[in-house]
Image (cartoon, rainbow, N blue to C red):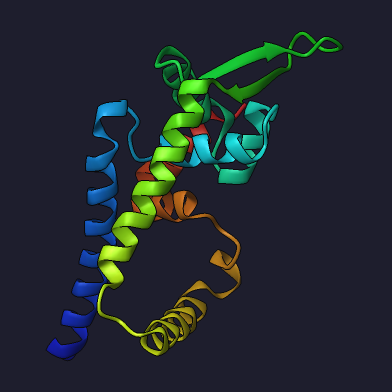
Length: 170
């Protein structure tokens, strides 16, 4: 592979990681970390959802979500309420602290994104978006087209993660 292409891929990965690091650093005082953010965002958009709903949306197993939900409850971000008709089913909502964290996170995400795109024209951003969509479509194929980022990250970690997921399934 040509060094120029290797450099492009390296920079693309670096930009993504730097964005994530900056947002994470801004949220560090909340105690929330990487994989918990998509859970908080989903619950924010779907108050009263269940653990199964979250797992299905993120395309991971319910047991793997259960650990994060417990941690977020302990941190005062989420609360569970038993369903009146089915005591085995719990509905999950954000606490006021969880909502404040989501709101701050959205603000931080925008702040870091604005910094990242500083100096780029609307035309350049449109071109970049079009190019990235084409690259994503080229790689996704049918197998990965509808997968979430969390699911893709797990797949990228290799067979050991897939084996863990399989072992956790009932």
